[in-house]
Image 1 (cartoon, rainbow, N blue to C red):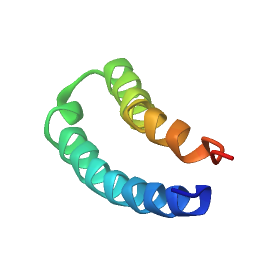
Image 2: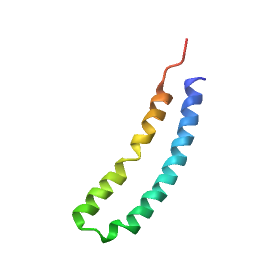
Image 3: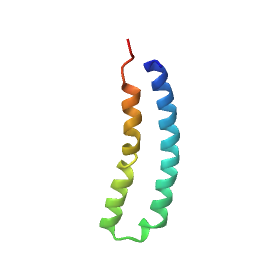
Length: 69
Protein backbone atom coordinates (compact mmCIF):
# COMPACT_ATOMS: atom_id res chain seq x y z
CA UNK A 1 0.00 0.00 0.00
CA UNK A 2 1.38 3.38 -0.95
CA UNK A 3 1.96 6.23 1.43
CA UNK A 4 -0.77 8.33 -0.21
CA UNK A 5 -3.33 5.58 0.33
CA UNK A 6 -2.23 5.10 3.95
CA UNK A 7 -2.53 8.83 4.57
CA UNK A 8 -6.01 8.94 3.06
CA UNK A 9 -7.23 5.98 5.12
CA UNK A 10 -5.54 7.32 8.25
CA UNK A 11 -7.06 10.77 7.81
CA UNK A 12 -10.57 9.36 7.49
CA UNK A 13 -10.09 7.15 10.56
CA UNK A 14 -8.71 10.13 12.52
CA UNK A 15 -11.66 12.35 11.62
CA UNK A 16 -14.18 9.69 12.62
CA UNK A 17 -12.34 8.95 15.88
CA UNK A 18 -12.05 12.62 16.81
CA UNK A 19 -15.74 13.22 16.11
CA UNK A 20 -16.76 10.39 18.43
CA UNK A 21 -14.16 11.33 21.03
CA UNK A 22 -15.40 14.92 21.06
CA UNK A 23 -18.91 13.70 21.82
CA UNK A 24 -17.56 11.45 24.58
CA UNK A 25 -15.46 14.25 26.10
CA UNK A 26 -18.40 16.65 26.04
CA UNK A 27 -20.62 14.09 27.77
CA UNK A 28 -18.01 13.51 30.48
CA UNK A 29 -17.45 17.24 30.93
CA UNK A 30 -21.16 18.00 31.19
CA UNK A 31 -21.94 15.10 33.48
CA UNK A 32 -19.40 14.82 36.24
CA UNK A 33 -16.83 17.58 35.93
CA UNK A 34 -19.20 20.52 36.40
CA UNK A 35 -19.71 19.62 40.07
CA UNK A 36 -16.01 19.23 40.86
CA UNK A 37 -13.76 21.92 42.35
CA UNK A 38 -12.13 24.35 39.89
CA UNK A 39 -8.68 22.72 40.12
CA UNK A 40 -10.12 19.29 39.35
CA UNK A 41 -12.11 20.79 36.46
CA UNK A 42 -8.99 22.39 35.03
CA UNK A 43 -6.99 19.17 35.25
CA UNK A 44 -9.86 17.16 33.76
CA UNK A 45 -10.18 19.53 30.82
CA UNK A 46 -6.44 19.38 30.19
CA UNK A 47 -6.47 15.57 30.27
CA UNK A 48 -9.58 15.34 28.07
CA UNK A 49 -8.02 17.81 25.65
CA UNK A 50 -4.79 15.85 25.28
CA UNK A 51 -5.64 12.16 25.82
CA UNK A 52 -7.11 11.70 22.34
CA UNK A 53 -3.59 11.76 20.93
CA UNK A 54 -2.50 8.53 22.65
CA UNK A 55 -4.75 6.08 20.72
CA UNK A 56 -3.90 7.81 17.44
CA UNK A 57 -0.10 7.55 17.77
CA UNK A 58 0.14 4.06 16.20
CA UNK A 59 -2.06 5.23 13.33
CA UNK A 60 0.11 8.30 12.77
CA UNK A 61 3.25 6.13 12.74
CA UNK A 62 1.62 3.76 10.26
CA UNK A 63 0.62 6.67 8.01
CA UNK A 64 4.17 8.04 7.93
CA UNK A 65 5.89 4.73 7.22
CA UNK A 66 7.88 4.97 3.98
CA UNK A 67 6.97 2.89 0.94
CA UNK A 68 8.77 -0.38 0.39
CA UNK A 69 11.10 -0.10 -2.58
